[in-house]
Image: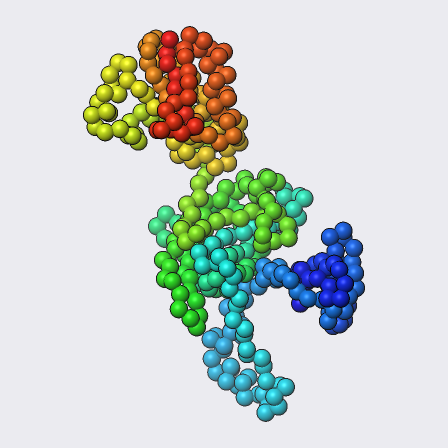
Length: 370
């Protein structure tokens, strides 16, 4: 039993979370109402435990930190123990517990503020979070134009997190140039082979000043900024937003409507669409209009989508009978409602209806220019 475990009382109704101990026999159980109840340990039974609530601290590779670095001195120290069994060091390490659903590799780099209420003055704890049943041997390094520089390397056990260091403000400027290489494996048993991962970590420094960048999570008792490295066995390619490029796009640099980048018709149908009154498809999904939209506010994305809609309508406003299908997706209906509002306000001579359900489901609207 340890702090953070959820327990229930053995001889009475109720339970809670272990908040601490009084000596070795009494546990302080905090119930759901926040009251602390001293209870004998033998009268509690653990119903849920979480290995993440005890972070493992990375050991520095000093001459005395590990037998691999001790050399002759390790031999001398080992001979200093006598034959008394109580004087011998404990070398047994229990095998880490595996959990159901933990066979897919899930790996994160986490930043935890030391002063979450004052981010402008806070330092940040740097962790590696291993949310799978594999050991992970990793190397975190700084990417340069011609070479790279190793920052740290270590191993993190299955279903656990490893504290690396505390970063001050001066160290955050280089975070966007970090990358991680990772190799996963199991000890003492067979396992499914996984690839070696090499993933860049593109983290914007301005995120460390935004309160909403730090969110509640399963690994820490406070909000943290989690940067995914591997999800479901696949490396995650993080994105950044170029502010200048975004501003240019919102002010008039929208890309041309993609009518033929993702053809849905046969070559014959493609040629037919080039005719005067052929159908035009415009995909308004943000992922189709922008190379990246990470960091954008929902209102910015919506405004960009509507800007593309308006530009398309203006380009074909005089082509009576022209059919234009705007693919907006089903979602919560926000974009569709905004499009219908635009049509009613500025394009009253046009007709509109739901596009073909067989081809687009409920996620598209067809406009007939009038």
